[in-house]
Image 1 (cartoon, rainbow, N blue to C red):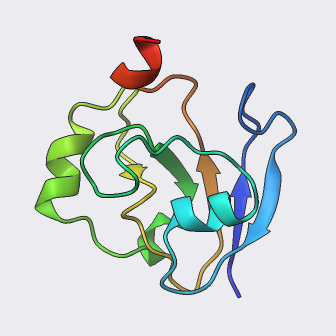
Image 2 (tube, rainbow, N blue to C red):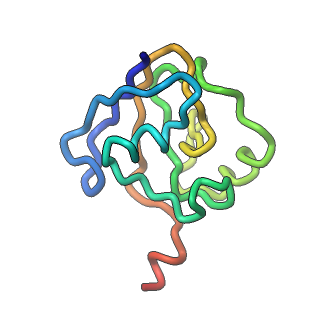
Length: 112
């Protein structure tokens, strides 16, 4: 079973974490199952960018990015070449190292 190393994030996961994920499971689902509260304002429907992550290692084992994910990622804060939407990136057999960006564009949260 592959593992996801989540690098420390000041608010969501201050000490970082190592979690197990099932092959075919999304990064977001694996994190949420382990009580790591990655934002997902669209309820994982690939309609926003709040679950944006940067895959620092192991990204080649993830499922390929489709056109919708690529178009949405263009709107993400802190976009990098290895950025993915965690609700769409599904695990392969390899371990990952993932960084959750410091900020996200979450209009619902920002407006409250």
